[in-house]
Image 1 (spheres, one colour):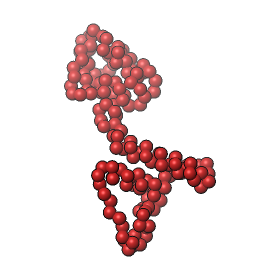
Image 2 (cartoon, helix red, strand yellow):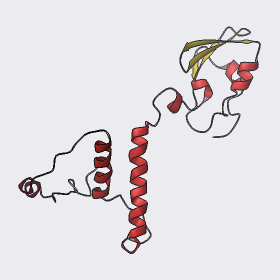
Image 3 (cartoon, helix red, strand yellow):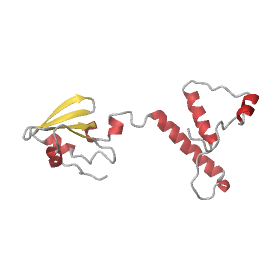
Image 4 (spheres, helix red, strand yellow):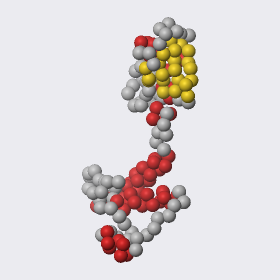
Length: 158
């Protein structure tokens, strides 16, 4: 990504009803200021975060999503706070694990141990007011796990 990737002239030359969105960098890739400042352009709001810009000189229009800003944040839920909370909690717990058990982790790339990932999940379920049932000893033995977890083998991907 970089600034001024899509210029006013680029937009004016686009096919009629082209849909323009930005997903990869910052909100300065598309020349929205040039589009807004042009007396040749009329802006029509279609719905929140979706606008059509008509070029009087060409008779064509383009549809711009999220006012040229990152559309995964503007047009959708982007990164829902609950998902981000899980991700950040995993990262913090991973840092604590690496700091407190540095001798167990020579330089390399590691997956977060399942027991820690499940701890984050449990904390988030509780934060939502939910409760998790505990396995009985015989249930844990039956599926070959510890009563406290982890409940899936390390190679298992959720």
